[in-house]
Length: 336
Image 1 (cartoon, rainbow, N blue to C red):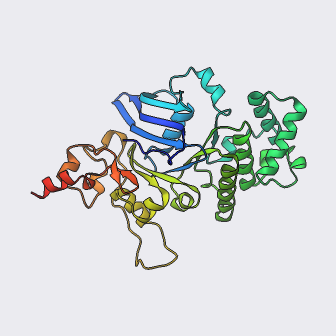
Image 2: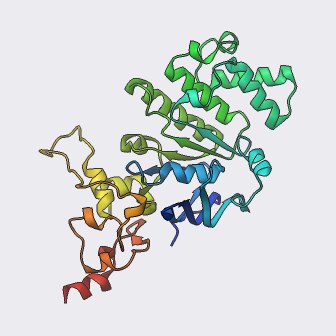
Image 3: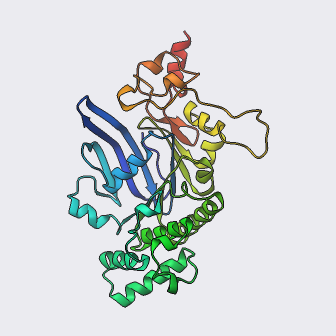
């Protein structure tokens, strides 16, 4: 079962049963196991989970930034109805940047330290939009102004090291928006920044997405960021989506025990909790994923079916969750 986009909204991105594997000397390791979701036009889908859950790998697979021995072993990825997971490298390069933008955690990985930021913006604009030098530079200045770079006419000729971390991330956002893409994949875009700068970047992303109608896949481990900007949230664990639904519903009333553990670990300004919840154990290694539900060894509510079969996503309030506790027949049978 796939979580649908908001009613009346056609999906910009459709991911269906995505399987990603690594071939190693020890055998095939499955890193993504039948991942499915949609993102509608103008929607922000937050993707959360611990390190190793498969969040960043999902984003890399969508944008075609995968290296051997990793490979897509099954499923489909569609951008506005057209399949893109089986495209040749040259064809995928034309989509990357033009129709799908990318914002990385560390802006220095996206900016060449040897070139002025304006040169990098102008090059991106000319490659994807075909503008002449003057028009491309004017658009670059306008983009820098739009993302909040002061005195863009002057700063456009600066080098990346002359910008603060927050300002570099604004330049990276400008690069991601340069060709007016349909979708932006933002992978931990605020992690390397100070808290006050994080808030500015979150506000900027939220405003730009609403004004431009750009769809966003926001990958993060920070539920505060998700609560502030996302429309829906997908919770990943061990390469699978274990819960997906409207962000308010998942935060207030999570239906999967892992999602509940994540929400219970969030500090509350209102108090009321003597101590934060802690999920015991750790994310399993790819070669040690347990049978049945991968979260079973860490779950205090596990029962017989959890070790036997992988639970599918099933209806859970306004969203979907992959937990046998939601299956009345399973719980009744276990009780007998």
